[in-house]
Amino acid sequence: MDEHQTLRAISPLDGRYAAKCDGFRELFSEQGLIRRRVLTEVRWLQFLAKRGGLEGFPPVSPVVHDWLDRLVADFGYQEASRVKAIEKTTNHDVKAVEYFIAERLAEGTELARLRPFVHIACTSEDINNIAYAMILRSARNEHLLPAARSLVTLLRGMARANAALPMLSRTHGQPASPTTLGKEMANVAARIERQLAAFERIPILAKLNGAVGNFNAHVVAWPQTDWPSLSNEFINSLGLEANPLTTQIEPHDWMAEYFDGIARLNTILIDAARDFWSYISIGYFRQRQLAHEVGSSTMPHKVNPIDFENAEGNLGIANALLAHFSSKLPVSRWQRDLSDSTVQRNVGVAIGHTLLAWKSLQAGLDKLDPDPVRMAADLESNWEVLGEAIQTVLRRHGHEDAYEQLKAATRGRQLRPDDLRAFISGLDLPRPARDALLQLTPASYTGLAASLATAPARNPATEP
Image (cartoon, rainbow, N blue to C red; front, side, top):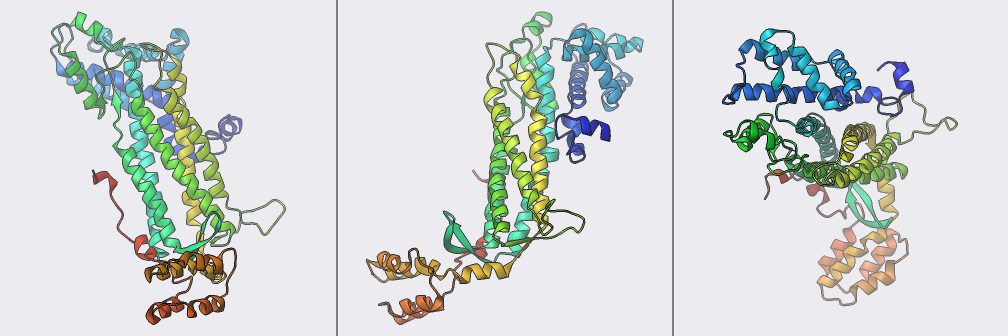
């Protein structure tokens, strides 16, 4: 898009962030939708021709099949503009596609014989639902899955690199038992992987069964044909799964699952973005500076965590839309109403904000360097977090009042190492147990965090 267009765009996806959306613009644009409608109409025509057995359907030569293939392959801006021009007359977007194909078939005698069979026995929703199914399949396979996997790879790498780097945990915002930075990274990666596996398994459904889902016109025109099997075969040939029982529209239940799957991933990433933002705020991470960037218009020292803030904002916008999609799209009055149409036109907006956010998160993570000195200072200032270990060892050796002893000694207090060691030295414990506690420090009290951070990733997709 040129600068004039981006400056006048209403949506920031086509304005401020236009360059970042170029990779998926064709997929979600009006031109992209029209192209996939044309693809569906052409493939249905070719399928019936190759399948044979329909009385009255003219023979189609390889030359014509090649011509039809080129019609799809060469479909671009000029062709989409022609469809839109036809739509100004029809006031019906799918009928305009049918007329466009019929118009092009008028270019030759053999082609012209196919004109009556364009859009044969189809309702507009037969074409639309397949077009959207192909768009969302491509969005998942070509954009969403690779982007999410890239995030996981980055997080897993950070987890391994920082597996043994101790840091203070905070539960309820207060100092808590230590962990390692790598383990906290691994937590996020594992959550994403689990939801990613579930998202990948969601079937992409479609239907081609006529005006109200009963093959009414099909059976009247060709009563001897097994239309359910033929429809199923055609939909499978497009790499989609057939939904055999529908009204005029495919009921969009799978879409609700699909959008909920993205929303769950986004919710995890909102949680992660806020945590990274907070760790930057308390100094656990330093952000690498870019010399040409400005952090504040008035405070020259600022290096703001803008990538995480940008991600959080875009994830919120995406999830608001995704929630509406999943609650609205499966609801349609009687055999069909049109309220889903304008909603579906916005699926690219939600996915666009999602992908923009995921890119921002990756950019933010790429700029982070842990600050071990700052983490060590925080641990050294909070020896009271060893209270959990001490009271557990006391319980191990039969002290019923172990919790109460440590509560009295540590609750609401900030203890120094000497204070805690003096307390441990006076405990009624076997010498080996007492000596082990005396060797313990906040930095060494991380349990199995390091090994958990480097444990092989689970593959939920292969688990029952």
